[in-house]
Amino acid sequence: MIALSLAEIAAVLGGDLRLAGTATPETTVEGVVDTDSRNMGPGAIFVAKPGAETDGHRFVGAALAAGAVLAIVERPVDDEITQIVVPDAVLALADLAREVVARVRAGGGLKIVGITGSNGKTTTKNFLARILSDEGETIAPINSYNNEVGAPVTMLRVTHGTRFLVSEFGADAPGSIARLAGLVEPDVAVVLMVGLAHAGGFGGIEATARAKSELVAAAAVGGTAVLNVDDPRVAGMRDLADSRGLTVVGFGQSSAADVRAHDLEVTASGTTCVIESAGERIPLHLRVLGAHHVNNALAAIAAAGVLGVAAADAIARLETVEIAERWRMQPLGSDRVRIINDAYNASPDSMAAALRTLAQITGPGERTVAVLGAMSELGETAGEEHDRIGLLAVRLNIQRIVVVGQEARRLYISAIGEGSWDSEAVFFADQDSAFEYLLTELRDGDRVLVKSSNSVGLRHLGDRLGESFS
Ligand SMILES: Nc1ncnc2c1ncn2[C@@H]1O[C@H](COP(=O)(O)OP(=O)(O)OP(=O)(O)O)[C@@H](O)[C@H]1O
Ligand SMILES: [Mg+2]
Image (cartoon, rainbow, N blue to C red; front, side):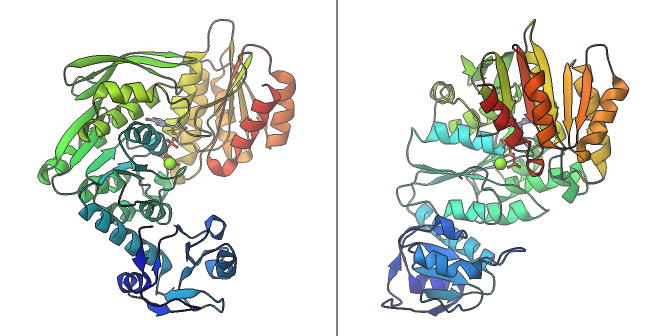
């Protein structure tokens, strides 16, 4: 964090400063800010977040031992550390992030990009961070830090030397993107797509669309909205952007897009296409597997363009990216048995995209195998959506459909019901039995997709298969 005095921090948080040791109100702190005591180091600031299972207040001692010099707490603790007592530690984290970003922005050198969408946020964040980091210091979340803790923790990493902050905003409820994006008012608001991911908590896709549009509503005055013109619900956010006087840049594959991809060719070594932007036509070979990632690449190229990066430069940098992120379409195994571990999360859209990719990248004489677990957080549509994926797998002629876990059983039942001459479905109650089966079943030429929601944990099965067949 940028250097602030204890008195300044206490004032920003409206908290009660309790000094320990040699600290005075003028003492400055500038260490890392986090709610996880394991991430503490010398000079760090620990935020004691009360959680459902563990209470951060129990870890103040551990934070102190690791070098923390300040604890932001909801009740005083006995540990010998300077404390600021606040009514709500998570809100305090947000207040601190807002202040730090405002101070850095006042220097004039910082531009902020916010990214939301039901799928592809982390991938696009990584693409854009790769492009921007060649321009200047870029701060982007670790992994998928996009919630009420991860987003401000990331924002707090900006320094006076930072040129770009790339923030990912997830929505767990209506209003959460407004709250988090409102902390920084992004110069560029990127909306990728509206799908059924996490839709259970929202009451349907239209409510999800409204939640995503909160990012456009939170963009800075004079800012830009980067919108997916191929998704009608995202394209529809243009009216909101116009009413706020934002510039709109559209990306997608339709001719309405300002940054457009066409002539896509999906292969096992990535996707090639032609990018058209500002009258230029530039070929792109994206190594990250799957046509769906071209859209994320387009979003990154468009956002970078708003920030002054020429499309040719953005494309050259994107071509160096080998993997979206661990467990997202991650190639494992070997050329003989290729494993694609995409089990970090799963929604109906990302399941369908991954299955299509599997079908597209599998050549003649090779066999498609899909190892699928449940998609969680779908609410009342869950049964129907699992049925749909079972049918899709059969229609794509996925040759071996391996369903893992009771929650995914409907997918198996629908695949059997749909049954074609080519597809064969098998069911296992747990990962271990699926693993044993796959060890004996997989053979040279197999192309194996592993996909489930994070909570189902098939990514571990994917990793084990990757090791066994490498
Ligand atoms: N445009 C897209 N359409 C369908 N699936 C996509 C798209 N973009 C990415 N995906 C898939 O969605 C999954 C999640 O990707 P990623 O982690 O980038 O998304 P996210 O929005 O950050 O997810 P989370 O909400 O978990 O943070 C991956 O399986 C990825 O391949
Ligand atoms: Mg993410």
